[in-house]
Amino acid sequence: MRARRNSQTLSIIQEKSEAVGQNINSKLIELDLEMVACYRSQDGEVELEPVFKSLFQSRIKVVIPVVRNRSMQFTLIEADTKFVPGSFGIEEPTDLNYVDPFQIDLVLAPLVAFSSLGQRLGRGGGYYDGMFIDNDKTVFVGVAYDFQLSNEFCSKANDKPLDAVVTESGWRVFSSEKLEFDSRD
Image: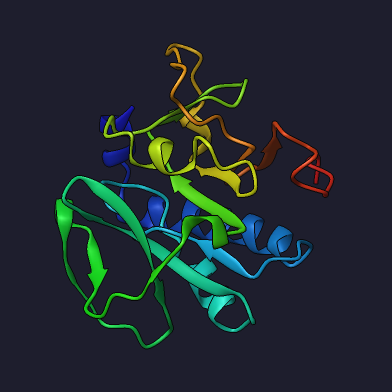
């Protein structure tokens, strides 16, 4: 799945990312959010630049993950934040302003694959799972391309299930009590 994601041309990634971003932005305005966690993309992941731009124009605070000593933390960013290459080659802010993950209302998480039951296959480090497995407050949303749907993997007890996933085709909601909009839009 990672190879397929990486084999997409830059123009296809940008086109699909724009569609995913529009789907995300159309729903985020319906939710009462104070803080959203996003990510800086790599390896052909969905790019969240359209989402960043929209969030920076709103009152919603934006955080992204950084990894230090095999531990993930979230730091605030703003439209003028400067970035440098960090862990795993992922861009990180030059200035770190950490936040408690329980302050995050909604997480937009990258993934390798997702299932029709809301299981998420990440890169195998367990960073998002470890951070949010015991957090029932934060809405956990996977961000993917349609082709990343797969039922050929199994989740483990310590894997955090998705509340929803958003692709270029729209939203699939697995936990409707956390997301109060119609997933058929």
